[in-house]
Amino acid sequence: MRRWRILTLLLAALGVCGLLAAGLFVSAVGRDVKYDEMILQGEAADFSGVALHTKIRMGNELLWQTEYRPSGGARTTARYGVSDWAYTDPPPSVRASSFLTNAPAHRNGSEADAMVEAVALRTPENETREEVVRAADWYESFPLQLDLESVFNYELKIPVPENFFVRVTVSREVGTGFSFTVTPEDSTSPTLSAVSAGLVRGEDAHCWFALDAGHLDTSLLPGGGGIMQMDTADGAVKAAYPLPVGARVVDLWLSEDESTLYVLHSLDGVHALTALGTKDMAVRQEISLPIASEAALGPTIRDDEVVLLPATDGTLTVLTAGDDDLLTLRTQVNLAGDPVMEAPEQEDLRELVSADWADGRLVLARQQYIEEDITQDLDLLLSIYDENGSRSTMVSRCSVGREITPERDKRTFYTVWDFPLRPGWVRPVTVQFAP
Image 1 (cartoon, one colour):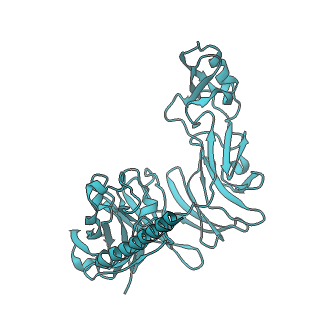
Image 2 (tube, rainbow, N blue to C red):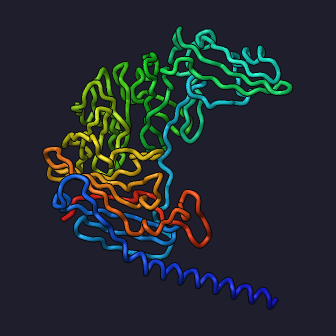
Image 3 (spheres, rainbow, N blue to C red):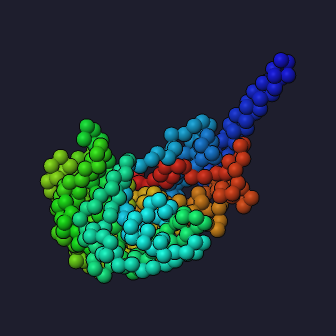
């Protein structure tokens, strides 16, 4: 019994030492967060009136929260404790896949249909066989799986073209078992994916979505392939808002109060944004976007009331939302050479970029993330565009980042008491114009 008491006291003392060490670390390092500024383009005065807020953590217990103003220094609040920065799952969204276009590879033979089984019967044991098959010989319409919290299987009427071929690969094992893969023979074939908006909950919880079917015929879908609504209870799909045949929905999202559904869409090189009331799907606003017809729209970046629409022609169109949820077209700038909007490998700019717009000026910011240099993960990239579209760009090196040495690389190094420094889980940097 005495041994257990001694062990308990030792563990308690170790915990106290850990808390003291953490407190000392926060006290010694956390209050000294600084940024060394390197202007890449423009002058120091161009960055006046800008405030950035950053989050840095060690594990999820040592926390630094800093307000930084270029040329004006930084002020840090540091504390020890569990943060409220933890990642939360986004609202459920509709996901779509088809057995013929984008199903997972190496599926189990138990999932095979008649088309695959026909190839499997011609595959010798312990061998792999490939055949190119005309899908229309087996399917009238594309088999489609929709997923929103539960999985629902549909044969929504998207006819299989006569010239649509798939490559069926079967690997037969000892006995009768086999695995298979089905891929379109033509790499330009559509993948039948879905674009969806966030979930509206309640007695009739539902989500809006549109299928991206490429050049396929969607005229037989509910509403002719425009915006559809899917209920969570039974997966029922119905037409919500029609769009012209051939229109491609690039993005859908809801206003914060869920009263407005925004639809970003393109048709024959014309790009537009439509705002719909979620109660009755009535059109509240239509905006024709000044984006070149040959350009494709990229993923929308949204930061509170600011909406950023990057396009493949290198432009960024900026809109802002008012208190009535209606959007105002503010400006369009040329992004050529802007490091803020150059996506790091395997990172999503929608999760990284923060923006603000005021009085004809646009500010963009994110943390740097350089795969080859862990010490630069906490550095900031900052760009400001004036009313004429001229850009000023700055890199701000974070002093805390220098505490990260290669042997403490966050990608490979973890121990109980010595977690590497990392950005906050959610929105690690935000930027705004401030007095």
